[in-house]
Image 1 (cartoon, rainbow, N blue to C red):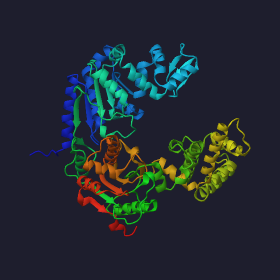
Image 2: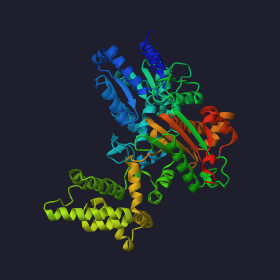
Image 3: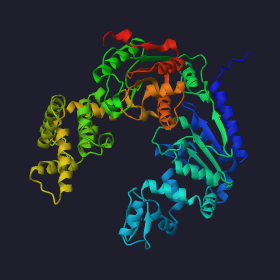
Image 4: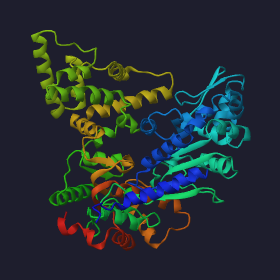
Length: 592
């Protein structure tokens, strides 16, 4: 009698790989559809290693390579590492790969650049037309002079899309890369995807094109292609019916949500947990403003989330760092929940604080917060690495006393003062010293009352800068501490868009309003009663994000609907998640 434990997911994975290898042997273009948790990258690496073994020496002998196109440097580096940096594999991001193909075609690019857009035509006209400019792609900013033309990221995609229609260019690609794999194919630009299908697959170019991804996980923008198909069935469709991530109850739910790509669970004896809370029986007046329509008032929604977390903790959930993620729709909703909404109101662009493009945010988070953290942990070597070379170091016992005194006072101000108080104190103590960028910003800010620009546009720019800094300075420093913790992933919170490709033991999804692009009740109703004509894109956008969030957990999944749900929407939830798992939170909150 065999003691081997059945692993249905592994068995399904093996069957999918057999089909994948067969398509490669038959030199047939294919689409490898791998749902959430299926192990898409594992299969991609297996395919690349299969080709290395089968064709590697032949390709290198003919100065050819296998191209593997990705959409992130992290993915590119992972592919290179997992194929042992084999010389026959050329893994690169989409823009870098496309540029490598066209950068030598200077004359052809120059001639077509005015056709990219009206803006490009005007740029070329303004410099007196085309001469013999060098076409460059460095930082991705569009510009034209009499000496050179620099392209935007989007321009690269438009040029390659156009060039694929030229037979000579297609022969050039094939001579260098007879095999091209595209990772996360669903994020490919629509026009480029159509050009690839029409010019490299439909007309039998002789190239082997392989698409790896999942069209249900297209969640980044409307320009992405989603599902790629061949009008004449020249793309072999291979589904990977496996889920190595989630326990059985979660996989069963995903299969009810997506019956056309059923997944086999890794461990049939696993259980998992699913629970859905809704707020339909709350009796107060719901929000009616714009994109918040049908949601609970902010304070009530906060209390509902608080109660949900309390109930989940009672059932064994841990909301400690690294164990559980709470997914919400927008950064504004996250800010309200985590207590830094006043601070982010200063910024028009979220990258100013999320990516620390703003000089104040970068200095306060990367220098002040890190310095204080290391000081509290008595990691003085790391502390002085954080403060930078421009800050005075400890040379005597008196220096040590001053540092200790000033940082203790700084820690007090971080808890009790506004950002302006902390900046003022640091400008006096210079422990740590203000960064050069912040010093310049402070000088500019302080000179504003006497500023007189050369025109109205310059005055408006300075006024906008002054207003932004004034708002930043007026905010409690505690808000910056909360924001820094979120950015450093030291809280359980994240946006729904921010978790694609990752997994967590437990996931709580908060389904509320806050963005016109997403209406969960409407999406659920359409999934039950049918999608109205002309609303297919809206349905897909909501469905995909809902699927991505519900497929992140390994062990436990909970949803909280603060938005009012229609009867049809509740029916869809009952069908997918199980009636026994759908609970009215009012039964636990009373008059919350």
